[in-house]
Image (cartoon, one colour):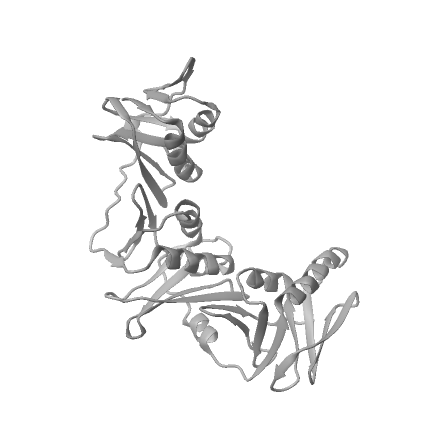
Length: 356
């Protein structure tokens, strides 16, 4: 293989692909696979659960396929200033010649970027990415294929609606979009995949999104991502809690609550091994906040329903507030044993109370 390619074009593709390359059981996966086509090259990388390929237009001097160490090639290309010539084991740019040998092409596992019996999801790119962005922060930390480590996408054909759900057991998120639906689906996208989708397609205006029972493919004009979906059933209780009614509500300014949370986060450093609970206590239209014996604050609020005393982990609250755009927060509360809800248009944030 031998090609001549513009530095920025090559670097853009490598930056998309190299971060996911690697698998401790297969050393070859630390390499990118580069193969020529009629009008350029296809660069492919994988970690076995996520695979990415990107097309780069360039001058093909000699057809072929080769591999390069993904991270090293990316770092080297960043330092170069001229057009780049790549051939087996060589990187040439201007007067610079670098030997950079990859592993045997024949060791690279076949990468299939098509899926059988696929459904194309009718979701606009901006809505799809916004749904992921809103709900990814409430997924659980990675563990052995737990369904809570992913984002649940559910179609509601009767409502022409797609819902995104996530939860780590303490907090949860929901986001809804309206669209014309031709298929019914219920799938769980791994959080790792969701992060890559946001990273790679954040500037894309047109995306094609396809799924089958085990795989997801998302692509734009130059780049494909294929990922294995999480096998399992997402808890229906998350959807039920996000859509349940609550009799009591308190309305608080977002900036004011954020300032209290920031003070609590500073003060918690002096309180080891304690719950990070911000206590809410209403008396009529007065709301008293407290954190242990180190912080107390009082403000007037709008309130509907009964007086209530309830506590929330302020670190969890902070996660939800980052996804909420409205400046007026309405906490919908049932009682001290039931989750509270904050809504912001098509986004809902769920938080379980905790003791204080």
